[in-house]
Amino acid sequence: MLYKKLNLPINLPLANDEEIEVNEVENNIIIKLRNISNINIDATIKLFESFFENSLSSATREKLSKIFKEIIPIIFRNKHKEEGLYQLLRYVNSINSNLDYIEMIKNNTFIYENLSKILTFSGLLTDILSRDIKLLEVIQPEYAVRLNGNISFYKNFFEKIDFINLDTEIMLDTLRKQHRLLKFQILYALINQEINIDRASTEFSYLAQATVDCVLQIVNRLINNNYEVDCKNFCVIAYGRFGTFNMTANSDLDLVFVYEEEHNKKTYLDMFRQLINILSTKTSEGILYEVDTKLKPSRNRGPVACTYKNFKNYHTHKSFSWEKLALKKTRVITDGKFSTKISNLLDKLNAYPISDKEVAKEVKKMRVNLNENKKDIKNLEKKFLPKWFETKYVAGGQRDIEFLKFFYENNSNLIDQHEKDKKLLLFKRIENLFFKLDQIVNICFTEQKHNNLPNAAISLLINETKEKDFGTFKAKINQGKIDIFNILNSILESEKSLLEK
Image (cartoon, rainbow, N blue to C red):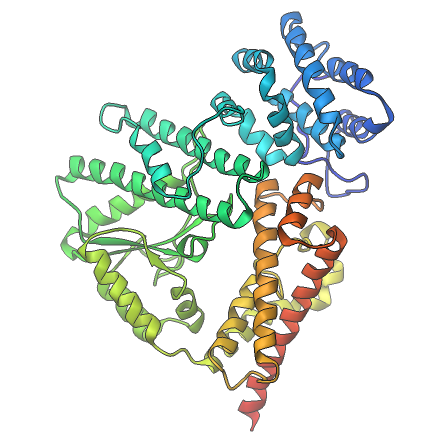
């Protein structure tokens, strides 16, 4: 009985998933839904009606009953109906106090087919949809506003917001709602197979760029009103996934802020802080993006931004080799003369040679803690160990591939030239598998990641990677990490041997 909101895991847990902690009532519900294959449609509808029997008004229960009778037969046609029914329960659990939302669902049965696709795919998508009634428009079959593969699609949406006449708080909430709708449209287009994973990644990046541009306009207006200063000599540099247009559904923004007018330092710092606050402050309408500024010269210390002189001096004389590599995955995301000046500086800095021996030394330092903790690995709790689908910072993951590509693409003396081209192809293939897996994982989970991916997400992944089956794909991921780790280890050993000679 749902006398209060359930706290169910985001996706249907495996029967033996020890990491999931739920109370007895919730565990019984999970067991019933896992065994749903043993009962028919009518019995399932009655089961769902019983969940809400004593917790809602009779009018609301009647509306839900009509919804259940329409959508449950549709979900039953799915091969993995248990997961869709589980998300249906979570969905109704979230919206049952929103009478307008329930009424719209009840009266729009033509969207049920598309709604079932959302419910079957993942809990994260279900959660996003449940927060905003307007998102139901996106899954309507005749919804006409489709992605066009151009950043103008997103800019045009944001330009419709009345930035001048709206109260600041209302304006920012409106911005978040619009962003959520656009993000959901990308997600739905992907699971509806209107776009593929690569295209979705580009669309997430376009959305992020358009959002930052919009927020910069807002901040510039606020700064002009407060300081009566027109700030032009500043630049925003994007690193990582945002810098290379490879964002996922949950990517943060790695940003570095640079300015030139020292006498207006306070104004510029205030502008950058407001930009970060608007992007990353969580409100009732959610959050736009987490913002990470630790790649600036002072890292987590000092002001939020740096001067042109400081940025140039640091990367010319003081930066680590890994920072020089990170600098190659950057782009300037602002316009103007000062931004052009920074672009030219980045071109110059990225033309400087990077010592392969220094990179090898820094990689070994990064691995010190990993090697020291190997002997204690058996004592760690299972829930703290990396999941099989984690590929970013794990041994043999995406970061290690970046180092390997540097050594091989620059003909380092540390590499074995034998089968060099073959290894570069191996890196590219594994990197592509990691990239697509990362995209799907970020559509299924937020911060808390369980051991299992939903079956609909796995099917999309297998289809995109053209692998034989899930077991083959998972084996290639695990073997890929081992291969990358071992090849990088051989390079580190080569660097050690050269030092000893």
